[in-house]
Image (tube, rainbow, N blue to C red; front, side):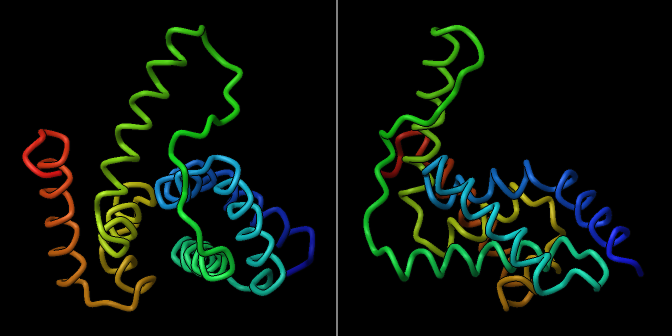
Length: 164
């Protein structure tokens, strides 16, 4: 395969997965800019190390997840959810409503433990089947199903006010 074909294939992979991968990363970080940085770093790592191989969405998520873990290890600090992200679209009222909903969801996700947040974010954002999420996380598919279900139930309780 020629280099231009490889770049084209990775470009297609990027276009098809950037929004879902970004959604996963923003759920995990709570930081718009950091999620964008890790997204870019993930595709860079993918290009540098796997450009000649077939395109794999689960490999891309594994790289992004590892980049997130690397960042967390290097910068052990609490993520502020009240930070403003750059949003230049829409009218002010709509933007404020979106931000409030975003903060509510992020507070709910923050109430989950790290493993629950990671697995549920992968299930929601990546649209990967459970067996691929299992491969990304190194867990069994049955364990992933149970953890996703429990995290969803816990999040539902958090949003309904049953759990703090």
